Image: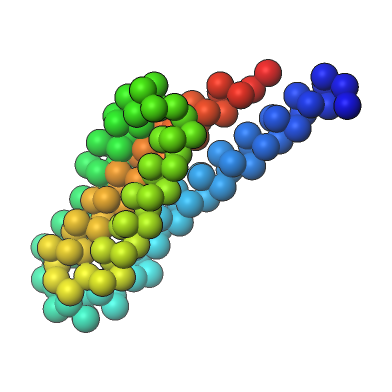
Length: 131
């Protein structure tokens, strides 16, 4: 394999990983619209509680993005991507088991933090491995 072929493989791999991360980010951001009606009915949420559950994603995302840079620098980009995956799993558990608006809000905040962390870590990793 030539150097050019190896570089193309690295770039293709990085593009796929960052692309999947982008799709996960968009899915996470957009999935709330489809689940809101069911959550509102099942948890008997007021309009204010629904608004908080939707809006809390953004502060979580900001915190995750800020921590993504620090964690990526200290522990490594791959470790930061792994941490984002674990946070996403944790948020899924919170959201699936939400029995009150508090749990729903916490799950959405963690989901936002995972999205922000993932976004920063994956882009930083891709720039690190790019030729």
